[in-house]
Amino acid sequence: MNPIDIIIKKKNKEKLTYDEIAYMVNGYIDGSVANYQMSSLLMAICLNGMDFDETYYLTDVMLKSGDVLDFSDIEGIKVDKHSTGGVGDKVTIALAPIVASIGIKFPKMSGRGLGHTGGTIDKLESIKGFNCYIGEERFRDNLRNIGVAIGGQTKNLVPADKLLYALRDVTGTVESIPLIASSIMSKKLASGADIISIDVKVGSGAFMKNIDDARLLAKTMVELGKKYNKKVITTLTDMSTPLGNNIGNSLEIIEAVKTLKGEVDNDFSQLVFYFAKNIVKSALKVDDDKAVELVKESIESGKAYNKLLDIVKYQDGDISYINDINNIPLAKNIIEVKSEKSGYVDNLDAYKLGHLACSLGAGRIKLEDSIDYSVGIVLVKKRGDYVKNGDTLLKLYSNCDDNSIYVKEAIDAYSFSDNKKDNKLILDVIY
Ligand code: URA
Image (tube, rainbow, N blue to C red; front, side, top):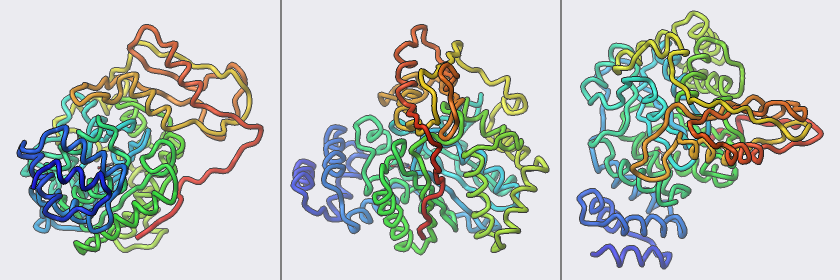
């Protein structure tokens, strides 16, 4: 076997065998397959796809590239939630403490930003000292003691995905159903949860731009789960517009903290509530009303907020960042971008705003890029809001001195209409 023949096979739209996929993936890990060869294969997969068998082979090879966690010695039902990635999607940061404060174990494996989307690990690392790489022993201890631990992929947990994820991020090979399904499912299957809840984002700011592709991705992940006897629940949610008001690492931590204090009422807080309610329902086997009551109580009593403090403390973070969000450093320039039109905000394009946030420094363009946690965007006007000419649409948090190009990009992301349109946040549920 050699890498070139395998790349050519996929270039010619032929089906790869288990052994060929294993040869490439394991070779990439041990260095015998070069960066450019793996990139080339990834691009061929992006362009020519993979059928279900190949997707399953890839998932299995990735899953077996490292350790598979087993939390069966820790009491209680374990739930994991994952998002396919979006703009302003900080759901995990608010959801994890709510679910854990209700007594459901939440072992969470998260990722970094990918393409124009942000990642939970980058967001959490914007809290001074926060450590997502605490090692398996501490991860287990935290899960046992406080009911929740949030980890980044370690060297040993699906190392294949760790390497491929970073490579895809910088080679334009993210948007592919088999690559996304195998990346997510290999991690979820390795991370030892009993229930896997996946938020499949749909729209311009998501990797799945239309509902049909999103359904196919969702069904692929549900079917992959069945191969390993795992229950996978997928929820398709709108990502044509950013989730919540804040985009950018520190800004998103601020919005999550405020949500746990009950100070936010927007699409983000609604989605957190929705996932929390459904996780509580399936983990504790209670009805809708009871689940809603438990989630409300967790927020109103301050238990969820205190659980976030625990998470930060147990993972070496500086809790003064959470205790007083004014301690969180933000960019030196705040530029108010004004509307040049009047009307209802018809859309504000999640993809364009995700890119804008990345250009400001909130995400990576190259593998070795570092992130500026302090930059981002605060949306003042969201979809459905009425705007008058001259009103502030959004605020840019920037460390650049000349922001004229960003202001133009921000204005371009908005479109207006004379009438307010209805929008749905939850589009479908597949399991
Ligand atoms: N999230 C992942 O973990 N992997 C992908 O490929 C896309 C989103």
